[in-house]
Image (tube, rainbow, N blue to C red; front, side, top):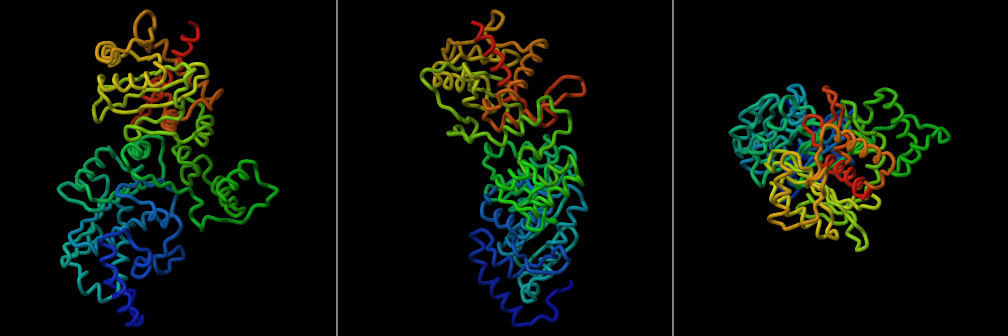
Length: 498
């Protein structure tokens, strides 16, 4: 094994070894100290030179905010993969009995990141590599440290058996949006190997408004995963020749003002937009919703969705672990309806959703999205309806809706139930469905200010025209919030006619 320390001052090598050894107790109980990575880890910089790992702004921000479970949405070449590899490498060699597993989308990508890990190892101070960090096996897929019973492995997401039979302390999943096959199933298997004290990082550039990474990003608030978003301007190297101030567009001026950018960064932006055209938003994202480009034709107006997504307010209150979000509390003089899209309630099935809508203006006041069986959904809806001035409850009676309606009557004793065509509940028929969706689409364009839910807008983004001519959620996406809102706005039209 080669060493980059050959020819360097022997005292400096010893000093770095002492710094490292003195840091072990601190590292065992705290996030990786930046001084330690700079002292003992080496990387190749953009010029190909071997240099200490000085964290860049995105790496520092990730280190500051990271939790036990993390999901990172990023632009190209932000250094996050390198930083996570460094963090987990240091944990592997300082905490005996540690297994770190890195899973990438292709074998080439896996080997590329693992070369970074090998470089960390090969450039450690000599006294460490020949002492407790002596390796018994070091290949393109595995590094074993027998003295401390620790190991660092790399696998690909294409391997259906990745992680099986292992207990993993650190799991790094790279470019999850590009994992082949059933990425959700692979991730579920990997998570099963991670104990409650283990650390997880999912990171990727975006790749369409569908699939495993899109789903994990959207439900992060519900699952407790820490979201990290790094647009392209977090990378200091992303600059080009400064554009003249007089040539700036209104959009560019607004972007500069909002994010503190300068004219050389706008020069870089123009260059990537000219080169990548429609893919620029995906490869060099500026917004955590717009970057998930819909590969099919979106049923709704994308510009209207994206514009509103930049302005939506944060909820003033969340309940049920973020599943219930509230933006506007009930006002005594106002009338409301609660529109409900039902589901079976299984842990892996569709969500049920409920939208609280103020009747006079159509304002979205609250939203519930959860996997609830019919009885629990009826109980939650009843609580919401009573809180909002005994609101009118509109349940889509298709499929599981009939069960929810029965529980509203028999168990919850709630009587203010909307009737459609002489029966309790709303019937979404083949003729009614286009009317409902078109009403929602018109509202997104004409009165976008009535919508407050980022979840709803994300679902609108992945609601597309399907090959069979119908409209619905793309494979891997959900449309429960969309359908609940469509039911609510359509029923509101009928209530106004009364």
